[in-house]
Image (cartoon, rainbow, N blue to C red; front, side):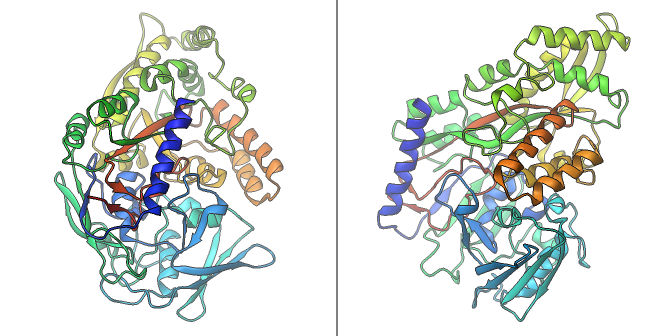
Length: 527
């Protein structure tokens, strides 16, 4: 009841702000938690990039920025004014907005849509250094243009979810005429803000686009994101009024309590966000190429302990898809309990883990030493300490291996680790994005190297299914198999918080899509 009331208050506040007359001017200050590896949204896999840089760009379509729970019903036109499906569901045609220009004054046309998808499909002369969203669009056979204001996406098979992927903050349109090396540090977009400064360890600075295609927007003159790596320092800056808004979703239960004790008029939303903590194990690296060892590790995890320690009970247990009631595809509780390590009898699970390890020759006098790689920010470090404690129950002694954000994901892409604790933020509540991106055999984001052609065939089968009940049953079957086959054991689905001062208006936190909601074009400052 308390969580619902707090969320309702945040929504009413946001709605009230939108009902008021916005004021133009001012610079919004949001602390940035670390150094983004680059400014190129298409090449990164963290909202350390999407949150600050989403305002530089536009999509063909976008989730409504003031409806907290994204779905097919919340998708709105942006650079496209309309879209139509062919009768067979394999061709999606967009009519594009006329008169839109890039920040450098060049016109946006259908050629830019084709170029963006050629880059994503690795069909362009220029290349991304990393391409984490390539699996999203593996079903795109081609993109064609019909004049400067029409583009059609041709699919190899029917895939209704493609529209939801296009509406994600991870799918901005890129300009044909700007090389990718520039997009990594000085990106050019069509969005409400222009990138003015990108100084590692110092600040990300954005200024108003005076020629934005939406008349009267944005309201703000700019947004500053000072980089404050120490979370305690950042929260103190917020409480002192030097920062207007915390980094999205970074506020924990005790930090929220502290903020409201010092700034009682602050507005804090705390709730679901569609991010899960998971154990990643390099299945190509001995001795972890042995499935039995991976099974033993999965059996040692006490999920309730994680939730009680880190979230004071305010988090959820589930598989790869976001649990209900907020998640549409989350499986029922009775199904969850049947999955490997998810049963409530932790002592029995750990006894089974010990028996597996002893059979392999490990024990109290022959323990397995390993480094546990984690991204070097509190969100990763804190749960990793608990994971290391749990692994001891299976004769595994872990040592923290903290890795800077700029090299964390490249390290995972190279499979340059043995064991890790990872946070996976799903950009939408849809199985296609989750399955293809995180468990597809050829996906760079499949960090554990899991590959089961039989299961991957089920990915395709559920993807084309239009009947919701039939598709959901398939999704549950797939998710159970992923957990039982130790593809990437999910520890928990976290809750997180964002706080802002009462004079910040027009922000709506997204409850099932942490990589959306940062266009910020109609946010304003009331002071």
